[in-house]
Length: 226
Ligand code: CA
Image (cartoon, rainbow, N blue to C red; front, side, top):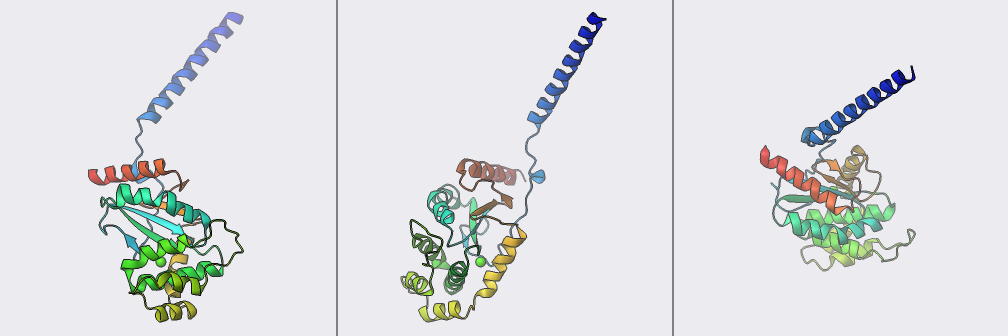
C-alpha cells in the first residue's frame, strides 16, 4: 500500500512538472500582442505639439507647472526623449495641463495656453522657462506662479503681447482650453503628475526611461509591420 502511495505521489509530481513546463513554454512564446495592450489614445487636437505632426508614435505628458516631479521629468527624461526620438521624426510630444496644485496651476495653465495661442513657435521655450522658474526646494505653500512672474518669463519673447497675456490670464480668457485639458486628464484617470502615455499606453513609472524606450521601439516596430 505504501509503495502504491509512493508511485501515486511520483506520478502526481511528474504531471505537475509537465503542466508547469507547458505553461512556461506557452507563456514565453506569446509575444506581446499590440492589440491586447491596455491603451486609450489621448485626443491631442489643438494641443501644443513638438516634432513631426505625422510621427508614428505620440507621447503625451499630463503635467502641472507647479509639480516638482514634472520639473524633474523635464530635466531628466524629456531631453533624452527629444534627442533619441523627436528629432528623428519617430515621436511627437504633447503636453496637457493638470491642475493639482490650486490657483497657481490654473494661472500657469492660463498663461501657457495664451502663449501657445499667440505664438505656437515659442510655446515650448516658454514651457521650459516656467518649469525652470520653479524653486529648487519647493515648499508647496510657496507662491511663485504669479501673473507677474508669468509676464516676466514671457517678456523675453517679442512675439508675445504682454497686455494680451495679462488680460487672458486675469480674465481667464483661455479657460476654455484649460477646461479641455481638465476633461482629458479626468477621462484618462490621471491621478499623479507627470503621467506619461505612449500611443495611449500609460507608463507605470514615468522616470523609467528604459521601459519608455522599449515601448516606443515596440510601437515603432508594430507601425512598420502595419
Ligand atoms: Ca492644452
